[in-house]
Amino acid sequence: MLAKPWIFWSVSTNFCAVRAASALPHGVLPLIESNTFLLRKEFRLSLLSRFSHDLAIDLGTANTCVFARGKGIVVSEPSIVAINKTNGRIEAVGTDAKEMLGRTPGNIVAIKPMKDGVIADFEAAEKMLAHFIRKAHRRSGWLRPRVVIGVPSEITQVERRAVKDSAMRAKASEVHLIEEAMAAAIGAGMPITEASGNMVVDIGGGTTDIAVISLAGVVYGKSVRIAGNELDEAIILHARKVHNLLIGERTAERIKIEVGSAYPIEGRLTIEVKGRHMTEGKPKTVTMDDEEIRCAMADPVRSIVQAVHDALERIPPELSADIFDRGIILTGGGSLLKNLDKRLRDETGLPVQLAEDPLSSVVLGAGKMLSDFNLLRRISLD
Ligand SMILES: Nc1ncnc2c1ncn2[C@@H]1O[C@H](COP(=O)(O)OP(=O)(O)OP(=O)(O)O)[C@@H](O)[C@H]1O
Ligand SMILES: [Mg+2]
Image (cartoon, rainbow, N blue to C red; front, side, top):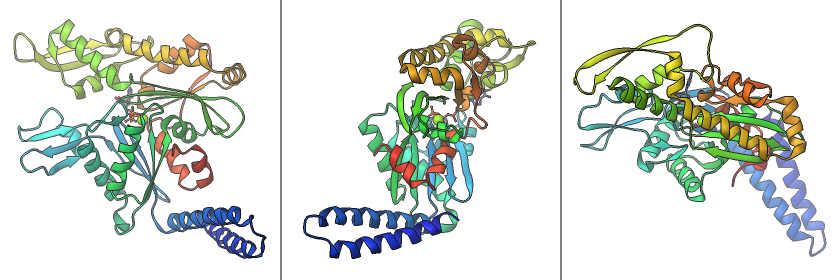
């Protein structure tokens, strides 16, 4: 609805600029010409966004979400690809591939192409992206979408290039990268363009991204490679050391989600855990409770809390005062860990609030950029 007047504006302004350029004295022309060029570019972009189905993608370590303009979130699936080693063909992607984790026959490998928020397996990442873009874009296959992708704040130039190239090869017409924490803050509805401090902590599968944003810029940004996956690994290690029990990552994640917590909870939660006993070599069931799992995850949870403390110590005093009033917003699947908000509230003494839809904040924020090109230009990493 909003795009139409913008196109008319672009047409008329472009036309006026060309007319004005011919009437102006020598020397002023280059400026007008460059303006005209910019306006033409904007016009092209506005036309593009009018006729193509632009996409916003949260290419996460654990989950990939795709937002299609005018439709909302159209893909939300695990970042996993199952590939047949014999013929190189893709057997499954996303939810179907996750089902195969730890259960694949010899000729099929289930690959997680993303590690710590960045591409670890280029070929698999590209195949996964192409699959999800095709899925999101089904009814307009001939159009190449313009794509906005959220990436961790501390990724290198080489890693940025890799994400862009993969998306281009997966048939995007152009790719814009924005910081995940910025996207998360926008998606969580924070007033990031105001001259005041907004602090967001996005706890994903591979990274915890912490940012303080003011005037649409990241005043402080930090990405630590400790998040949900580390908690799963801590549980796997605990089961092996304490119970001699070998469990897979899907089981560990289920334990974390069902009984895991960052701070004592009311009542006692227990879970029956099935695995393989290391010395007996046969299947065994063990009962674990919330306190045991809280202890097992203590180190990585402490590291996440410490990263928030470090951020609070480094931000400029004026913005600290804002954050003292407004508090911290938590996003990302990892923030759903029971009582993590309470733990952070207790340790920082600040108001801590969970975003409305923590698993979708990044893709919703990136999605908003598809219809706010001015803001996208301000925050884009390009
Ligand atoms: N209820 C829950 N309790 C605890 N952890 C949860 C819960 N739900 C999801 N998670 C965890 O959240 C993580 C996935 O979150 P998210 O989808 O935000 O990550 P991501 O964006 O893929 O990763 P990253 O941002 O690091 O690249 C997983 O580690 C998952 O186990
Ligand atoms: Mg994420």
